[in-house]
Length: 92
Image (cartoon, one colour):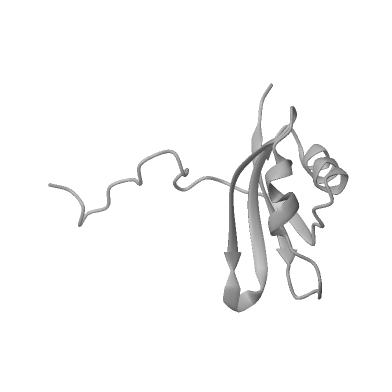
């Protein structure tokens, strides 16, 4: 199965909602949560999820109760389990 990367944005300004609880459930047989971060100053949570297509990722998020305010395709610059690429100042 080919997978693509998607970013799911959830705005956390809604009272009595917490994105932390169901975010781990975004890993299923069809999808894989790769990373999630909260940008505190902006009250937003970004979840990076791999899946076959946007519709599947959205359906999984809905099924586990993770509200999605925005969903779009994403690309890795540096994946969490890969070393960061060397820059000019990093080279020996």
